[in-house]
Image (tube, rainbow, N blue to C red):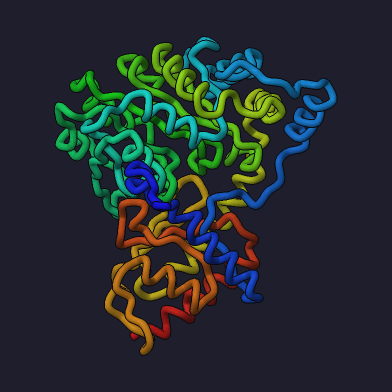
Amino acid sequence: MEERTSQLLNRLSESATIAMARKATELKNAGIDIISLSLGEPDFDTPNAMKAAGIGAIEQNITHYTPVPGLLDVREAICMKFKRDNNLDFSPDQIVVSNGAKQSITNVVLSLVDPGEEVILPAPYWVSYADMVAFAGGTSKIISTKIEHDFKIQPEELESAISDKTRLMIYSSPCNPSGSVYTKEEIEGLAEVLERHPHVYVISDEIYELINFTGNHYSIGAIESLKNRVITVNGVSKGFAMTGWRLGYIGAPLWVAKACSKIQGQVTSAPCSIAQVAAGAAVQSNPEIAAGMTAAFLTRRDLMIAGLKAIPGLKVNKPMGAFYLFPDVSALFGKSNGERVIENAEDFAMYLLEEAHVATVGGTAFGTPECIRLSYAASEEQLKEAIRRISKAVEALQ
């Protein structure tokens, strides 16, 4: 019997964050004290109001199939949230609720991208974007950014990347992995470019919206000239610490929403009814519910920046959202501890895991091979110990 997987599968790579988390777990299971800074998951519990809503859904027997795009009252709640927080006008039939924002983005890419078409990805980008594009048979067109610009794409860089084959641009703000937050003025600068190219659609990934240290979040879909070309993606995983509930959603032009619902109907159908009800409670809640968690992340960010900046060879900027740092470690390339040579960021990430017992993720999977990603979604005690270990490991490199 021939053991052969499809060409489609062979186009995909394993998620780098999941792969590193798996390696870290294997070492933990072997009795090694690993500090994991690899996964993007808040270390907080789901707020009681969301848990109560989920329990209530079970007690009220809301445990049956729902419409593929989601329960009507949940979609209505999402419309309210979009208007209240983002100045976006949607009707419930323009909302599709999915099994996490990852499925939401995949639905859109599969709905819009044909083989041979290009998708612009400002790097660093979330690891799954490029594989989603590959899944659809498209080509990722990577635009490298600079730490000096806080890893944000400049309008002239976007202009030069657009071609007749460009179908989409995908970006996130606040960004995973860089933590960068685009200002209103910066988004308007990108919008001016996109206005000149009406064949280009935009996926705006706003899953980290509530973990924002600037106090201001701006959605590109609120720009009138682009509102029929922007698909806004959000969810409850990050801002409400509901990763395990697996609930994301989009607001999109009606024809895109219908396309996404068609794809979802053949792959998973609707997401869990209980999770939908809990998510409905989340989006209807006052966004200030996330303020305590965001304040804790800000304290941790500052702790990590101070600690990492003191380590020779690490270049660190000051991200304004999410819960990641994305230091440039290229100054360490070519150095050795006498047993192993650090050739690239992946080597350094593996060195930190095996020698310092700190799990991070190399930047190649994010399109920025000179960096590593560290999540500071861990206790301050763990973060201080991680900094100590990283410092000691770097000190051993000559």
